[in-house]
Image (cartoon, rainbow, N blue to C red; front, top):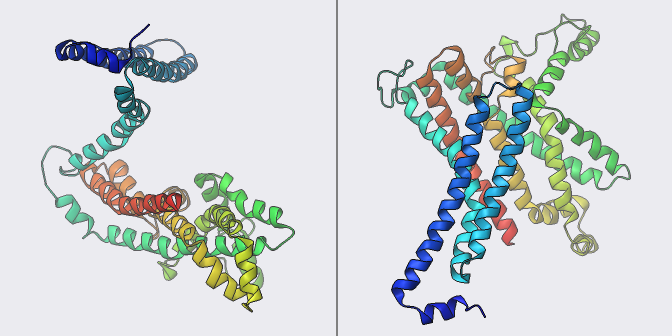
Length: 371
């Protein structure tokens, strides 16, 4: 009969026990490492292959998925051969380790490299320290970008949350709930670029194409207006772009709010109504406090989206007419103006702006799960 790990530890000397476990540990590290190197070498082989790109892409997908699966299976099989104490310590790293490694490789390291580039001039030859960061906060275009991002948060995020909550509450009382929610949620299926193209046509100056100008000229008889490029109303021309985000994100907010509202026990709502509370009082004194965690989560999520907004602005105006935001300024400086240092500084500032909101959002999610 095979001895258990505990019996083996008692019947062997410390040196023998240490040597056996050291061999197991080294084997558990070496075999997955060899498997990973084989997977890594395979991608280099495919990169240098002269086969058709379609074939290479297909093989790369199979090789990547199969290689990761093999890596998990090999590592897990090795840990199963260890004692309970070692297995409980190592297995979590096996399942979480690859995801953490990918995050480090694709997020942490590029972020560090971006910060390093931001310390140099546009050519990357001369070290300029924090000069690029100083320029970010003293350049007029960047000041306009910060202001516009603030408008996106104040009007875009707040309107999306309010409208989504309003639709969730009202649709919940209607017999056409499914139809109404489907119509509101439908824009979520459209990409940001596609939404920008659609609304570009809505705002087209030619009233034969642009719906807004067709209505405006038909009702007032005035000449059509270039709504997105109306310098006389800047910065409020940003509101025409923000409307696109509201159109897209309201459905997202509505779905989450609707689920949260349905989770409120009906006994609590009925008790409030029996006590004489009006529907408005039920909403503000019972519903809102009960779903406040969801409201905060949705608000912070859409706020992060507003801070990172790029596609809609780039497609609709290209950041012209004082509609630029932080992300479009980064794109313009880094790729159009070929100013890598300044563009990288903008990217780092955007990252620093988003991370605290994201951390707060994750804490709210953890608190809700704990509750």
